[in-house]
Image (cartoon, rainbow, N blue to C red; front, top):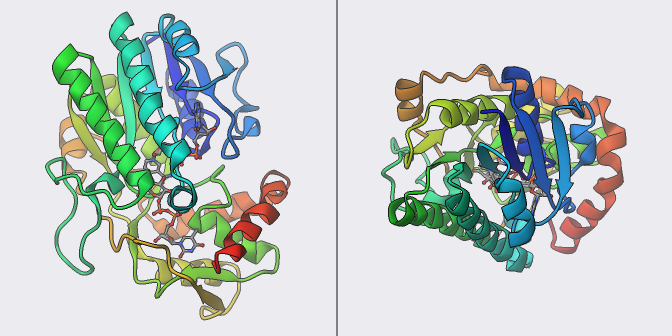
Length: 332
Ligand code: NAD
Ligand code: DAU
């Protein structure tokens, strides 16, 4: 791969992946990003400009997408509206970006015969019972709960159809919850950490029994690169690092790491349709492609992430007030 197009490369996972790609390959990178509220040009500031170019544009715009796809060997598709709570407030941008955007990209890779990796989520499988032995596998039926996860499920189905009907050379990955640097303050871990750094309080939805399967963003990047380089065309790979934790335990860990009492948090209004538990079985990825996570201890990864937010207040602070006002208006 000499030249890779990364859509959504100014967002949380996309930007981390761009740095991973620049560090671990010789490829040149073009980022296509609409620079929505979730994007950050600062996240790409340290990328070598001789190897990394940012094009501001919409993945649902056929002209810009066709022009960029025609000049690359591979596309990695991260661009999406990504926050469940926002999808409950207004689903429309989720339909346009996640569905129409993926369709637009598929038509371009089909025209130009370019390899595509589509980045998706474990949320397409719905949720699991608490304390049950089941985990998601590549064979789990789709059962999305929210407008966000339904739009991602639809985008996966489009990719699968373009593979089968048109022979598009594509792979799909479905990953669990990421944490690490550059994650927007609307998301669970950055929200709680930055609340505490500002002297505010932790906000836990409902009882806090909901389980998420945490993976460090660097491990998500290394898995996507392994699939891009060695994954079999038409296949789906689940990405996870055996990081199941309930939200209450995560909150207590964040409070402890920041020197606060473990019961110093508020229960707030629960999310509508809140998925109970996600859990990934990543055997296929590990056995077929030899991938392993490097962050196996969640607490030390979290401590490092807290340190990053402490050191980057100038980055997150400008967005904090508006995000908290939006949550407060919903009793969250
Ligand atoms: P994010 O919201 O932080 O970033 C999304 C990026 O996409 C932003 O830079 C935004 O400007 C860009 N974008 C949005 N609409 C666009 C459009 N129409 N055209 C071009 N660019 C557009 O999201 P994230 O958390 O980094 O997630 C990236 C991808 O990974 C998404 O596809 C998401 O579904 C998937 N994913 C996320 C997680 C997670 O835990 N965050 C887990 C599994 C999968
Ligand atoms: O599983 C992968 C998914 O993980 C990705 O597809 C999504 O893009 C990503 O946003 C994430 O979805 P979640 O909805 O699981 O993440 P979020 O950070 O919004 O919330 C994580 C859990 O924490 C969830 O159970 C809701 C809860 N929560 C969230 C916030 C923002 C709280 O208890 N308090 C909060 O303030």
